Image (cartoon, rainbow, N blue to C red):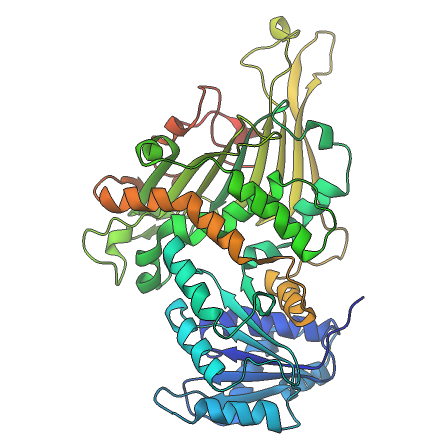
Length: 501
């Protein structure tokens, strides 16, 4: 197992929600698991002027509820001792010079450094410019890596502009474009499922698969992020990044090896093979909606236009669905349906693969109702699971069939799931870019959605409302090619029923 070299993890925006809710708990989990080396130092950078002790008190409040019975206070104290604090106040011309002196001259801080951009996307470029001007990105005495959260750009042109600015100070191997979705256990398991088993490989093509659905639904609204979300929308926020990555993992060819470059090469090939959506065909391949007031889990919630900070008459979509085709040998003619929405009936993420019906329906006279297809479904959240639906005989004298679900969970006994950020943070410190996005991946994903973004920007009034707490807007059935195709509303057997959406 590759070991982590001594390094300094610098978190810009350490006082923000991402750091407090995700990064600090993930790092503490790694501490409890004994995965952090002795000479690993955390440096919190934030705009507030405060003492190191004051910051450590804040970290203590975050991790104390996370302490388990099997770990004593010594683990917490060891974790807290790693933390230092640096004020990066706006207008302080000496802040980056002081940071440079700390990292390069103070022996407390190992010379290898990771800079994590846990800040607003608009602030990333400015911080990297200042790091570069201070010489903090030059790999003189050790390596330098920068972690950038999504979104990477606002469209293809802005992504390319941002990338050009980064290349003034960084080389591609130094840039870790993080998509936390790829760190989820089941997402990683997609690769194992695909490439460690021969069972389904002969069936993994257009001869046997009818279509693929990739869904991410949320019951929450915008959660106070009006300034970001209203400028992004569901298409940019989820489909361009997370769901297209899942599509690539499902559809990619087996790589030469599991190395970062070989994996990313195959993902890029899939994204580049997606059939372009022309301006005239956007309405046949894309659907958008916006939630109105409704009830979620018995609680009344406001509509999107009633949320604080949302401008009157906003046409930002909170639901988006796409139909895509991959024009290559394996997937020719197989539709991939991607959808995501906020304020939906359930919070879940899943990959559902529907197989074609047998070429001859020999049991049509013994069955009541339509022929039921086989499905393979990979649950990502809230449960890491795999399900397979098959037809079996009903016990008794007569030859009747019913659908049976074979259910398997990925965890056994006391095995615990880990947060996506835990594995990704380890990968950054190890220098493993396998689950991080290369720039050509980002550009290929933007090319898929850019035509839709442009048409939706022109047709601002054409958006379908849906009540919060429902399965989404009605009318999305027009994306499907046949009447017997429909959205899976759950991974359970009753989720296979035809839905009027």
